[in-house]
Image (cartoon, rainbow, N blue to C red; front, top):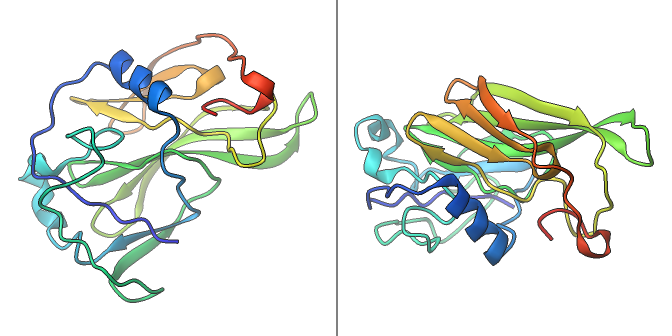
Length: 209
């Protein structure tokens, strides 16, 4: 399944990190990101102009209007493995994290099962933020936030990454649940982090359920 990005011409309004995290928790999980990420050629035809036209940035879940809709988008109506696809990029791991777009760069969060056994019943996961070129899909950088086993259970339809990143100014904020909140610069370096403690979930359905 391919994921297309509909970029809005509306200017991005300022939004506090706490408000965004609370909104995501209230509304629920975002759209699940598949392992293969594809960009529509019609949707991204204007990608080189993004460096000048920042009004098309999509810097948080559901976009600048908070609705998930772009009033000026003109996406293709037909899809195949090759039709209306500009590029594909393999993303390691899995997650419900919604990709965001800022100044010609796509940012996405993911959790990768390392296959290494943890102290408990779960394997150790590698929790990462990855940046890709919007124009080509080339990986620009990948930052490993933490490597550790999940402390709780997981529903069969859930995954280890449920929250989506947000960009405000020159900083990217990523909430990794029991791993904490992390602030990165747009080169992938961690500026600060805060541990909020282990989350407790109902019936061990997993964080973000």
